[in-house]
Image (cartoon, rainbow, N blue to C red; front, side):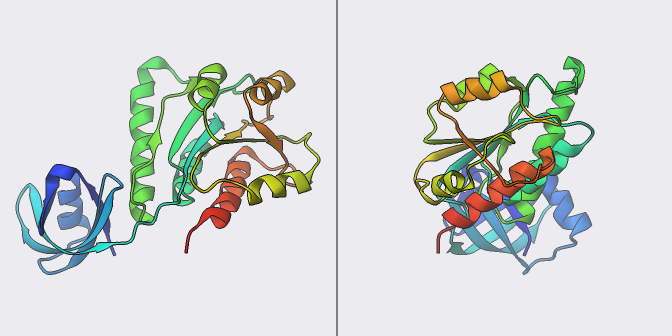
Amino acid sequence: MYHFFVGEEQISGENAYIEGSDVKHIVNVLRMKTGEKLLISVKGDWDYLCKIVDIETDRVNLKVLESMEQRELPVNITLLQGIPKSDKLEMIIQKAVELGVSEIIPVKTKRVVVKIEEKKLSAKLNRWNAIAESAAKQSKRSIIPKILEPQSIDNALEIVKDFDVKLIPYENADSIEKTRRILDNMDKTGNISVFIGPEGGFEEDEVKKAIDLGFEVITLGKRILRTETAGLALLSNIMIRLEEE
């Protein structure tokens, strides 16, 4: 079933509507008709099953049939992602959104080689957030995770300094039992941050800086995972452990 996001002002009682670019998508791409059903989410607070009652030039009018169970994890997860080369970040955003992340912060660590020109940053952010929105619709998320503009490592760590759980996978960590214990004992009501290095990993002083701010160094096993694999592997583990019945 197709899924769209609306603002609080777009729903009142049994009446709701969709506007903007989604209208063209509904009419021209999906070719939906009056009477067909779809899902809408309102700011992550409620999900609704709706029926199309009328299609206008610039809006699709809906009737709310029933409220639906939320599909969000009970925690907020922020992914700090060392900026990878090529278009890998786009894939990471897509898959991380599917796995339940709430926010993604691209981070400029020492081994990041990508340089994003200031004049191109706005277009990059728009594209990254469009990918997040598309992935949120496809995976039936109740919210659209936000992609922030790239941050220095100091600024990124400051953003998540008060989080309840802060994890940094590092190839020099050697205790899989510690990792299992941390994952098994995560609080289902807190905020979680995951910090993933770019190609080439972290430098030791960056790991120390994270540890000094409360990050737990963990291992993802004996194999060295690529930057586009490591975060998704850890997010998958977190999702399985925290998913509610």
